[in-house]
Amino acid sequence: MNKFESTLKIQTLGRFNITVDGKNVATEWPDETAKNIFCSLLSPLDLYITWDRICRSTWDVPVTRTNRRRLEEIMLRPLNSFMIKELGFNPLIIGDEGIKFNHNNVYLDALDFHKTVVEGLRELTLGNFAQAIEKINRANSLYAGCYLPGMTGKIITNTRNDLDSLFRTAVMVVLPKLQSSSFKVIKRKLNSGMSCPINNGKTVQKSCEV
Image 1: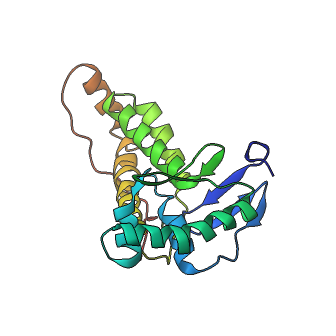
Image 2 (image 1 turned 30 degrees about the vertical axis):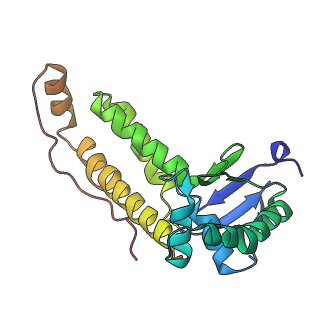
């Protein structure tokens, strides 16, 4: 299977699931450590993870030549073979400084969510309220639940907390304010050059509970 001929989708919000052309793949992993390493690389906040972070997250020890060689031989090589078997190609890029996930021709819901929220908040700072509401509403629809629920590891846990915080800020705080009855007044004052804080509004309970 050629990666340019398939559609790889990875769901990490609310559940962990991988599909290629709509079919579930990678349902049985070599071991939990390999699965954890792969999932650690899916973080939209850390597009490149150093060897030291991988070693500390996996074994809670700093990187050394021995640890890196051990990681490559007993974990990454079997993981690479597993990726090729299940996905048809290996999306992991391994370099001297660390490892990253190749997002080309891959749809990752967490990356889409993060990008959409950031774009929405940027539109808000520019005073483009309609565009901000559109973006944040889309982010709300993308956030199906906790990032990789039930999975452990420092990188995964940090990403889970950061994405949940981003959701709370954008969807549970900013969006209700933009949709409140005072929205038109705020927009009119800002357009006239007056400073005006956004009033409180109702929140939506959809954040991660772990």
